[in-house]
Length: 124
Image (cartoon, rainbow, N blue to C red):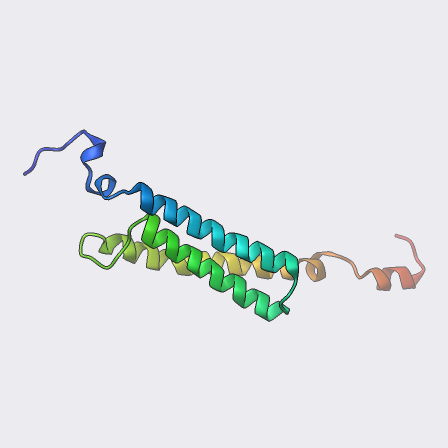
C-alpha cells in the first residue's frame, strides 16, 4: 500500500491544472454570459428565440467550464466525476424549472384581482 502524501501539490488533480486552461475557461464563460446579456438587453429576439438562445449559451458556458476548468473527460480516472456531473444536471434543471414556474404563477396564486376588488365598490 502506498504511503499517504501530505503535499497537496503532488495530488494528480492539482498536477493536471493549467493556467492557460483556467484562463480560457474563464474567458469563454465570460464571453458566453456577455453575449446572453447583450441579447437580453437588446430585445432583438422573440420570447421563445430568446429562451432558446440563452439556453444554448448556458450549455456552451457549462461545457467550457467542465472541459477547461474541471478537465472532465471520459477517461477511466475521471469517469466518477463525469457521472456525478451527469446526475447533478437533472437536479439543477429541475430546481431552475420549478423556481421559474413558481415565480411565473406567483401573482395569480397570491394577489387579489384588482379589477374585481375595485369594481365591487366595497372596502375591506
